Length: 406
Picture 1: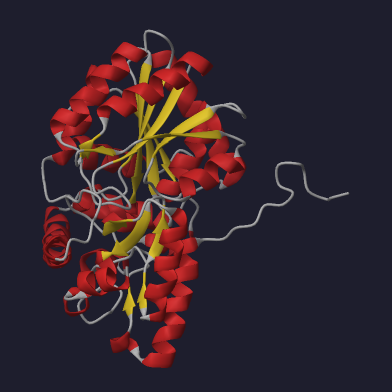
Picture 2: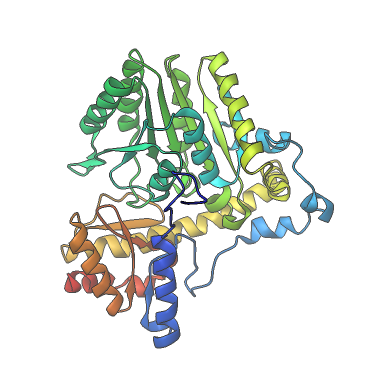
């Protein structure tokens, strides 16, 4: 006998990121901060090991009236100025047929979308290396997991991507696939424009057999070193009527506002009837799960987005940290190559991942690293190194230390 339903009975959350972070914190207390490499948390830290909260985000926040901070949002869908600002942030002044619904971070967007577009027992397709909570969300909604192989010859494995989607379409008559790009978590890979063209061309072809939904998780989009990356999003205007692109946007990384829990779901399709149905379902789910989202940070985003001076100050501050991430990555990637430490293909972003395909070897290596005060996060196929949180002085020699431990 259980008080829980069958789906919830036995659920237990073990978050590998926070579990590893706790062990790193304990090691710092015991051995001192200088003796420990904490590469666990996916949040920005500066070179002194201090958590980064952008001055040009949280400074303007102090100017927002306390009543605005205390109030409910203007609507469940989101404050009108916030929705307009998200559109401008992603698409500029281009026209694209979409609906935008505020969400509590990117996680809220992805979770709500999976809840609304798939029936229990259907499959969500995720990359072979990917963010762990994709699987948690799938389990929450009683969904099956299918994986496409992410890399082949250090490039996006378009052949396996097609094969996986074709198989699911054949078996289920519908495809929902998650693509985390740019600055992929956990590998740091960013797909090329040509690779995206192949994905979208194939999606249009596949949609002749049934609905195709591309769920593009862009949590790290504002840390891409290619300032024109967002231009890719306009390609969603060329999708066939039976394809929907859903963008999961987050202010967690973009604004160093992890705890504020503000993001958005942006649904794009030329089928206006389906677009309206999706919007209605997303708003209904919002009301039933989280009701409304943080009003003050929606106001803050609109404030910065619509004030030229505030926006430029924010961009200039963020660029310093993009450069810092690049400098850190250059150290680790170069030294890994020098000592023949195999990584998954890396382009940019918060993370790099040491390639360890065998789970038993991965777990054993991680334990040995912890004994040497090096703390990483176990992910599918390897160990994730959070470049975002490790200062340059601790990255120097880290690849050699990991290689020696292997």
